[in-house]
Image (tube, rainbow, N blue to C red; front, side, top):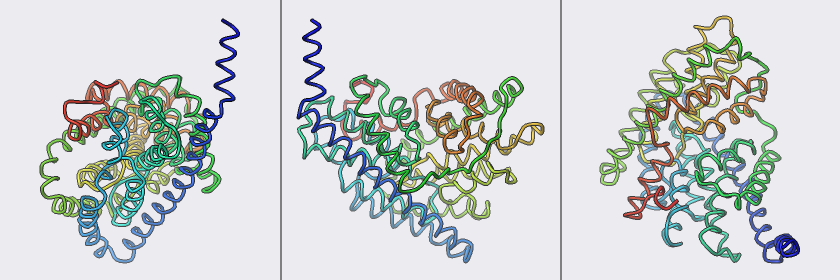
Length: 437
């Protein structure tokens, strides 16, 4: 028995085919890291360009948004079907699709290229979107496309390709390998299998390190060493957890129901719908003085580093994100959700004058983000890593867990799983992701 076990272990470790598969996985992870870094630079340039345009000529920016979104919707429907929305629901749905032909509609190099181009274009036009979800889609598309050059056979191996690509994408997108691992476990596969772990985790780390080497050790929300002892912060943790979970759950429910109800209109009049959503975005931009446009990274960084809060910002940013998603253009909700959470925390900080403002802002970010995506570990790891602050670990964990419980009461089905089920039901009738897992 022992010798047989040693022989099997030896074959797994030294088999030429096994090493070929590992090298393909890890090599593609490096490619994903490079592509994700390029995507980050492209998205940052597009976001900054729009804000510069807004500063020079607000009226021109107001006009660009509806016209730009209409053009993006047309190109998406005409040339890049499958790139719309965040991309995470498509990647999750692909885990349960039957047949390569169906998966290739949403996971291909063409889809990856379109996702990068159209998301960047959306930011250039002022949409309230992020590139993190789309990077998951890009990573899964790149990794899945490699099945043509290596002997990847069987449903489990196909699943491993998509999981590894998606997790590597989120790792590279945030420069946070640990967050990529957590997201893979919490969201990309609710039925995570130990057989996936070794190759996937190495792929995640490689992609994250590659992006880190290209972009540098950049903390998106600035650095803060603020602390908030849990023994004296229980009320702030409780309020941020409950309110963040409630608002995040309501946002998720609104997005799920809005997507379902607006789907017939989106199929018949995609360009008109995008144009109308663009007009609403211009209205929110006017009301907020331009703060609701783009990813929201700068606004969140401003609040984390001690900037003055704007009471209307989180609500207007939330509405702008809903409208941007429902417009049907490619773009994610990660970055805008973190920005909304930062705004909520900043608004709540006035009720805790003895606590550091940055600490309450971080609690708001974790509470709301957890409420939206219901992945508490990913939420506190992302915020902790992106602010370079480990001193807030316990309050962040507590806030995330409370927010998850509250959000689940409001939105029983996690947003990406619900959107994946809807996408799969539309593209592969009589099947859902839940049934096939």
